[in-house]
Image (cartoon, rainbow, N blue to C red; front, side):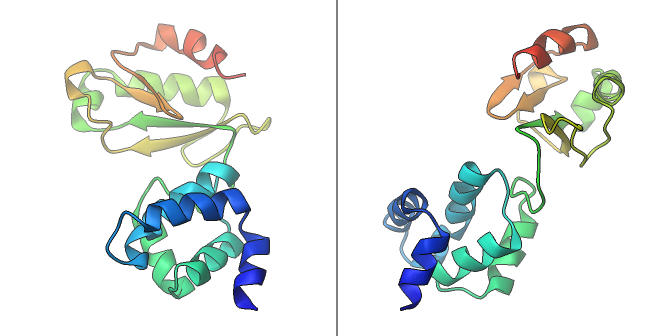
Length: 162
């Protein structure tokens, strides 16, 4: 049975969470972004295999779901570190010191955008807006937002994520 094979690929917990997301929208496909976010929350990224499993469960083609996944910059389609650093590169953050933060993080971590540290601790990604222009520059590590960040604060911030 198809559902049984899907169930073995998606965990029971993922299926339960996806089902909750499906029940709050008018039709199943409308929950596809939530389904991607749920699986990514458990696995850190969406592999091709995960995408296919989600697509079958959501009654979509893999191509349909991949077009959704690749449209949203926070659906990660390649392996990432334990912690995702989103560095806001909006015009406001740029004016308020983004370049110093970017240079410091790149040198300190030894990575560029889209890369992961050798210890798989951090992946750094640009983000066009974190929605806190009044407190620029800003960055987010996982779900923690840091505002009015200076390069001098970065070591202390990074140490929280061991």
